[in-house]
Length: 294
Image (tube, rainbow, N blue to C red; front, side, top):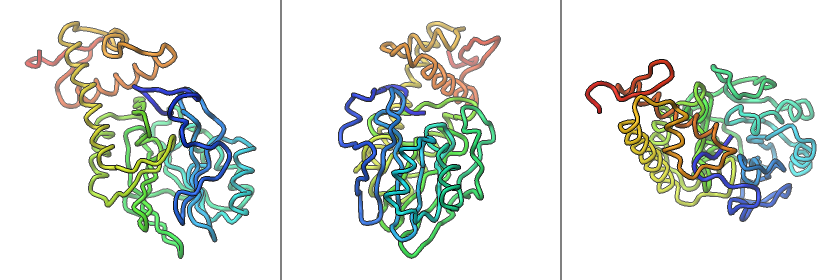
């Protein structure tokens, strides 16, 4: 699941530079395959990354789409050593089980502890701790735990190139849905800031094309989320007590009706963050500023 504030459909600008079902070489170690699951939520489709050549790490195999999985097998020649997932939303991980069955490669990724909007077929052979490395003769991937979009989200840094595989933590051309309880706005912002401690040279997102100015993109995302939060606080001060639905209509003033549920979920994530910080309170489904903050 992607996009929250600037959604683009399959014909939108997010599709520029994306070739569906055709491998695109990004570097000497990395190729990208985009799955044929374009939608207003996924943009042009979910990106699968093929890392290495002799023994390939397949990162985010996508949906269990036979065409896409056959292309992965053909492009890699079946030389798949690992199947890695950034998180278990239904557009990123369901293809892992079938790919593992076809190749014998282990599925690696973290399970969600909250189990909402997750892939029920996900059965990893192992998970990742923060800073854990998968080192091969061709490449080294470092796992960076980035909860926020999902509680089990992991980004992976290709150390030889400074390329960050960001899954849905950072998107090209869009912000992301934060869907409680698996999604957590406070954790999301902290995870974004944490990435600035690493030597990033580029970001390879789960949807869209490579981002060449990673730190500027991170700063833009943080700024955007905090601006949205200030808008929420302004509306809450005027309308309290108010429901999430009422606030969403005022905060998201040009909302595609198809995305109402996602906007409300992300706004709830902001409210829960403010509640943790002692700024907002909830009672009987309605929200108000905490005493002393109005």
